Each structure stands twice: as structure tokens, then as C-alpha cells.
Image (cartoon, rainbow, N blue to C red; front, top):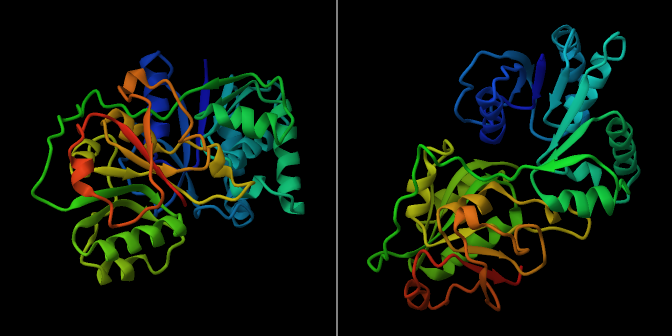
Length: 348
């Protein structure tokens, strides 16, 4: 079987897990990927064909790069049995590249993030949703990383009821990077970790206020890639209680990162139609797997709904805090077992 995989970025850990799983099952896909300089990570283990450079988000601005990639994708798809597209624009690219093919391949479409351009009541959002509905009619399988994408978006927004789909959650592969045993730490400041894509401005402002008002009793440790927060570096330099450790490699760096914090920040700001309502971020699964308590929004999102996480060993326990106040009794939290997996929520 000839399988062609179209990647929006070559260094994404989730996508590399998919490629590794395919190879373990005897399928060696032909991989074509765009490059994104702002996405550092481990390079693919096998050779792939580059489709050029694209920027984060901004679907309309990607059109030029997608058009330039069309001949390469068309050539790769000749004789393909399956084309696996890891984003909506790549599904559209695969559809265009195979329109004149005598042998039409089957399409697999993976959704790990319903982009903001697809939600809301604007004309642009309606156009993009119509394009996706059209493409889904010719798609054999939809892969989602959160079941809420199906119930909340594809059923509730797109009104697509009988979609053939499969759920593959973003659980980290920690076989080679075993989670260390966490120990109680009474000798340092209470530490909140904020990991991954740092793009929620409301979260960033809340964490800055918490660190400032904590005055050394509460620290914030940040790892990942800041996006859409132009003052990020300035804010970090101005605060003695915020530390930025730069990008990281998953799963290699995860155990040490989570062993060094007391709480993981998984909260994010959303409006009624925001795509993050259905998302379960990587940091949610990472914190579950590494037995780290979490701070989440009180509003129901995919990351705060109960989930059977037995394979991650996370008991579904929760406590509510009235607000994210820095005068939180840190000694009360430190008295809890670090493996208790408490999910802490607050008004956001």
C-alpha cells in the first residue's frame, strides 16, 4: 500500500508519533512537510520532502505556499492508495492534487485543533466551514484528538452526524522517558508551569499578576514557543519570579519539566464560539501522565470534563478556588501528595 502523509510542520511530536505507529505496523509512508521556523523540535527520523516555509495560522496568507507545493504533492500522490492530511489546508491541497488522477486515493483527515477561522458567524467562517464540509464528503476517515470535536463542532456546528471517525488522544509516549517519582519540596517557592504554545494573552497576564503579587512565594516556569504575545521577552526580563526555559523536546524533556513544578497551567480564555472549547491540549495529557495537579478554567471545556485516564493514572478529583489569588495558602497545597492528581479550577 502506498501512503502519502502531508504535514503542516516537520517537527511536531504528535505527528511523529503517528508516523512511528504506522512504521511499527509495517507501513512506510512517503512524507511531505512544510517548515515552520517558530516550531523547534526533534527532526524526523527518516527523510522527507520539504514543501517550503509557511507561517503559523493566517490561512489566507498560506495560499501562495500551497499553490507552489501543488506540483510536488501531485507527483507524490501518483499511484497512492491513501493520502493522510494533518490539517484542513493540506486536505484541500490533496484534493486539488488528485482531481485529474485516474485512480483516486482515499483521504484521511486529522484534526488536532479546530482553527478560529472555522468558528463564529462571520462570512469568512461560513465559507471555510462550507469548504470543509465539501472536502469531508470525499474523506474516508476523520481522526480527532478530542471527542468534543465530534460532539461539539462536527455535530453541533457543522451538522455532520454520520462521520466515520476515530479518536486518538494526545497521550505522550513516555516509554523511553519514564516519569520520575515526585517528591514533596518545602524549601523553594510554589511553582506554576506553563508549557507548550504560549499564545493565550489572558493566561499570560494572569500569571504575570500572580507572580508579581506572590513576591517570591509563587514562581512561574515557562517552556515552549510564545506566539502572538510581542511583549513576552520584555515581561520575562522584567520579572524576577518568571523563568523562561525556551523550547523543549517531547517526550525527552517532559519528566524533568514536570518534576520541577507544583501545578500545571492548562487554562485558556475562550469566547462562546472559540475552538478551544473542544480542545484538549498536550499539557493536559502530559500533566496526567506525570501526576501533576492542574489549574483549569471553571467553564466546561474538553480539558475540564471528566475523562477516563486510567492509563495515565490520574484520579478524577477536583477542588474549586474562588480566584487565582497569589495569597493562596501554599502550605496547604504542599501538604497534599504530589501524586494525588488534583485538578484545581478558578474563575477566569
